[in-house]
Image (tube, rainbow, N blue to C red; front, top):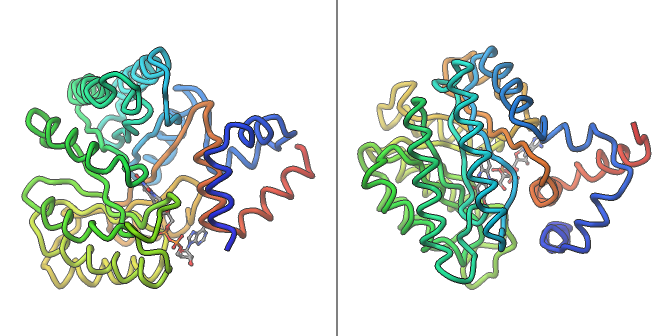
Length: 309
Ligand SMILES: Cc1cc2nc3c(=O)[nH]c(=O)nc-3n(C[C@H](O)[C@H](O)[C@H](O)COP(=O)(O)OP(=O)(O)OC[C@H]3O[C@@H](n4cnc5c(N)ncnc54)[C@H](O)[C@@H]3O)c2cc1C
């Protein structure tokens, strides 16, 4: 019930100014976003890698309508990749990129600019020995993002895709992307989408998630199962066994700060587990989506506001 209003607030610049100016306890942001600077992101990556976890790092920011901001985001990714390489972490960590953060929505030639910027990030990733995954954003950008993915995969076939099970189209997109060498992250979807394009009931989204999982696990690509949902994790494991998949031919992914015990439990059981680690100053939209997913987090948020630690 609270999901829609919180997601609306996530897109409001006024709400962002208000929330950002609140005397927020550092702990509320730090629970989901371990730092704002490259060195903090690298430190958090090293800790997770030490626990046998893989990482994908997201430099926070989205919906950029400013060329200088898009350039700054690309520069941040290049700096991060160099730092990961220098720290010997490139085998444990890749990067996740939102095309809207690197220019996709700019009025003149935005999609081409975003593709060119993503190419620069892919080149830097390959230089240090890692990969890039293109995050998926709201439904109006899906075709553009999949077009960019196809273009990048010409030269960088290792580039990962993200598909969102709440969209009606996704089972068919899974069929197209379940081929040899294709890394596909399946998530439920985090945006407020209309019923014309998306399943809106939780149960329908879960059923779609399972249908998509079946396609990806039976295919010859590399499924990346991004969920905290114990039922989906159990079903994914069973489908992997049924498809004769061995550990290493797929992975589980969860967000930083969400179900950390389960992340370690799965890794200790021999699964590949990757933690999505966001960092940077622009944490507002990301934090609001996490609150929308789990209204229980609102209580945590409220307590942190009161404690002002
Ligand atoms: C690695 C990763 C990458 C993602 N990338 C994208 C992307 O590119 N685009 C996009 O739209 N979305 C992305 N998402 C977000 C995703 O779409 C969902 O919004 C988010 O993961 C919540 O859905 P869920 O599958 O975890 O389950 P939900 O339906 O939110 O929750 C199901 C169950 O999981 C358990 N659970 C969930 N959260 C918690 C918690 N905090 N603590 C304890 N138990 C919990 C509970 O048992 C809950 O009932 C990503 C998610 C992950 C994990």
